[in-house]
Image (cartoon, one colour):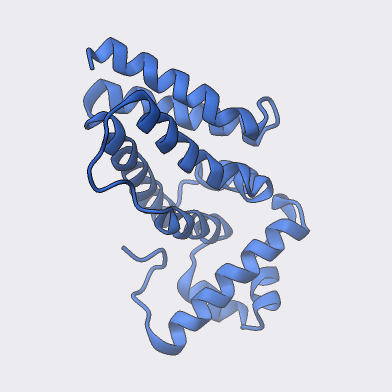
Length: 187
């Protein structure tokens, strides 16, 4: 699924990639509150109208970056081991994405909460992709276990994004939470 409102190819895909790259640079350079679609468009050397053709808001743009990063994660093993070490590896792979770019992660913490239909669509896709990745290591995380992990993950991201929890602690803490959920589930 595309991170933008329209399917793009060719030159338009290049424009979208330039906007995503410029947005990452902008997140690194300014506070999230100072970031605008206009400032990203300027950095990407495209018009603001062009940027808004693809991204409905700065939140949509930031979430599109996160969705791209989720899609770039290395594929999970073809034959899942379904063990504690496989779970730890899956959680570490996911959280490494956030710990390696703390500025982007802080921006994502805010952007993912937006009430923008495009953000909601990406938020759902990101959540489903992360649960599938964990499910590869644990067996499907559905129903209450999936909801509990999602709430734990979102809560951990909010805590880290607001400075109450170091991003470096996410892998260890989320592995513990997921292990507890699996024990409760009877796995």
